[in-house]
Image (cartoon, rainbow, N blue to C red; front, side, top):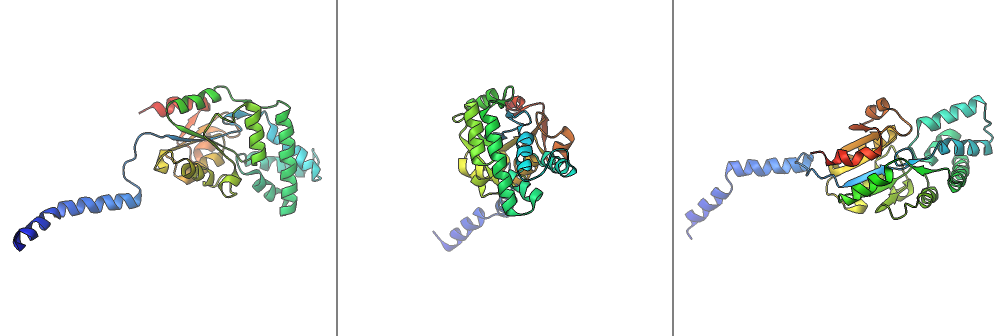
Length: 263
């Protein structure tokens, strides 16, 4: 082949149009704007208030823990602390207690008392799945999706809930804050840990997050999830869910499989 022929072939392969096409693809890759497949095959679900009805057990367990630290029911201090617990539903409980009690020693004592009290209430049969929750999870899995259950509780409490409901083998993975480096919601860590550990999807925009609190919504949106669904079976209302990043608001998690089947 002559030098002229070789040069001509090289020029033909690197036309301005092809250069522009390649540059556009590279920029899209870097910016994360390339089209994503429709399938959203990783579903990260909250537990209490989303899939599990705890009947106010969080508040009851908090009251026991607070009383152990000298916070008496009926006092202004008790009312203020309980209000904060309600406002921060979904957050890691140890983080809540750090805010409420100031020192790490007191926070750890309160958290230990809370986890013990909550476990006792769970063992007493005071917990149940929300209507349609188990069936929704089973439908999601039957549709080929990977489901992960997350919580702001410690592992020992999460396991107590799973055992009480008979859910140990219901999903592929369960996560608590300690499983994701120690930070719970509103940080995105548990959602991202689910993404990394399952390998179920190759883009965070194919992740679905569902929960009942503003912190669930923040966690999902900060992780880059493509669909962040609030449910109205728990702590926060429609306005709070939408204000903190919900892309959809559902009556309950039972509606999620049908939503994901939509084109």
